[in-house]
Length: 182
Image 1 (cartoon, rainbow, N blue to C red):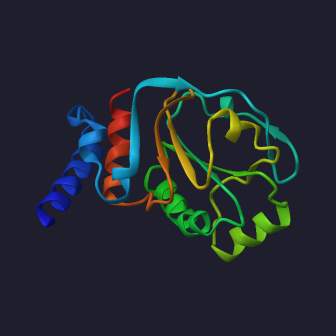
Image 2: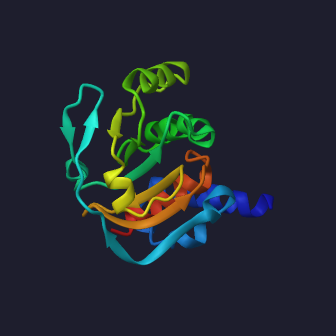
């Protein structure tokens, strides 16, 4: 087990240090929570939907085209969602070139989201809402949390159902491998 973790750690360092070495297969790097990550054989188009920020201004996932995205569907009432959110913020700090985009889906009042973000010290992630669950439903999200990995074209390439430690060595290595394999 220790050898496997060291191999993942060395791979993550190699990928971060030299993109030329980054031909690693993301599937081979999955360990721990990342074993739940289902990697698709073909990318799946993400349907368009309007998201709202805390001030009700409209946004779209098209805003993130051109970069890799970790799209996390969550809700304020979802205990596993609340548990994983700090790891998503730490992931954003570790991999600033990848957009970490949490989307509160369903009925989530802005004051409740803001209160949770303050309590959990979430300061660098955007507040985006899918109040009618349009994006979540069209993407086939049946429960929460669900996280989609999107390529720079905005297509889903992988999906993880349930919570995860998104800043783990394995998660970082998998995401770096995706980004390097563009």
